Amino acid sequence: MKAFLDTSVLVPVALGDHEHHEACLDLFIRYPKADACCAAHSLAEVYSVLTKLPGKHRIAPDQAMLFVTNLRERLTVVSLTGDEYAQALANAAVLGIIGGTVYDLLLAECALKAKAGTIYTSNLRHYSLCGPEVQRRLASP
Image (cartoon, rainbow, N blue to C red; front, side):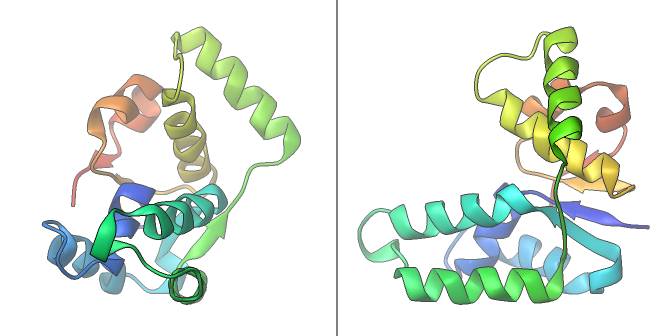
């Protein structure tokens, strides 16, 4: 069964002192590339988060890029076409999704496109707004 790892799972993989590091790292290494995926947008989100962490936790841009490269080597990267984006936004309107939760919906649409059986996230609340197809696939690390 294919697993989808969202940004909230990928960031702790890079941070050894993160409270969810071990659980997220276990997910990251458990699946072979053919059975694990993430959204293309998550690559940018991971880079953004890692390079803007406060103080000593901040990761230099070149180190963040090394981690993003590692993600691309270990995970299948899924993106939406322009038409799929438009349909996802139409779905958001029907579901009443507003604000930043639309980004979680876009990630969820990538998971559905990849036919992921499980969507791993630490943000169950937002993903649970994305409809029954997403709800039944949700799991936290």
